[in-house]
Image (cartoon, rainbow, N blue to C red; front, top):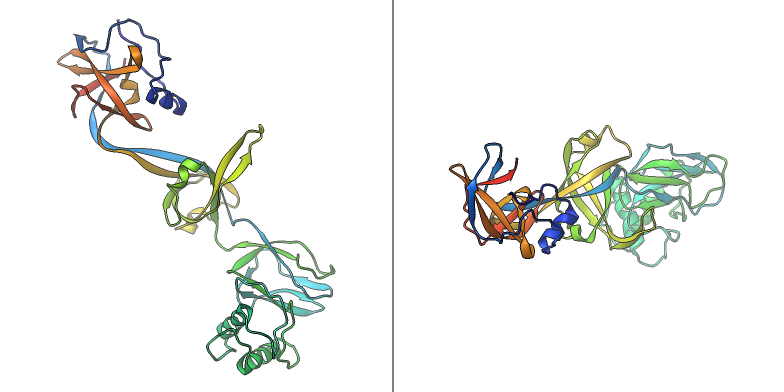
Length: 351
């Protein structure tokens, strides 16, 4: 009689096999020695290959414009206009108006925290302002951290061109530093509301994929690594890891806690995701579990007494059961070694 073949295997089952689990019943008690018998013509076979075992690893993610950030102004007064959703905010773009005077977006990592005026101390905020005024064509010197005559002149000319009286002082709240170009995702306040530091929610201008992956995937997704992004229509596009955040503990709907690693990926072809706004996608990557090994489908394994395994080699109408040791797994393939099995042999996988 034939031994029971391992026909269906889950991820948990793979681990059980690798650990030598004994949960597979045997239809006879013969030991793992080579035996030969006639084989039925209905037996399905597979070819033993020498290959690298590459495992596909997949995690769910979300495709959208990223997590919103909130911006506003330190000016006091009444909002008389607010940029509409979808407005792109870049250097010099009007974000809102307070008492009918504009507030502008500028680029920089350091938030504005004081007035810009003659006699102020050196600082990174001064350099940021000079860099922006230079990009807008007003500051003529090399930007540095010092508020000098060139800074004062650039401020005055820029303000004059935007309807302000000639002044070398730029009050706190007139410009808002944002790290990169963004777009307005929603308004948190409207015309008629009091000005505050919470007026607009903004997101990136390009869509990104955010995913929380298990720690086992972290080494596969370092910054700069490429991964396939599987879209809702089944098509795939390439993503590149932009950021990997520290691990966090998450609780699912059933209350089970697990550790996850937040990962953000950009798309190398943004047009591929143009039709989608806020959808679930899959982040797919691979890892090589073994190189240049003999491999057969997992279905070819026969469970033997004592947690051992065998395969049936089919040749000249006969099936020879050959004891083997198992190694690495990858998807539906398993590494075999230690038996009289060679590349190109045919092994039974079912009937």
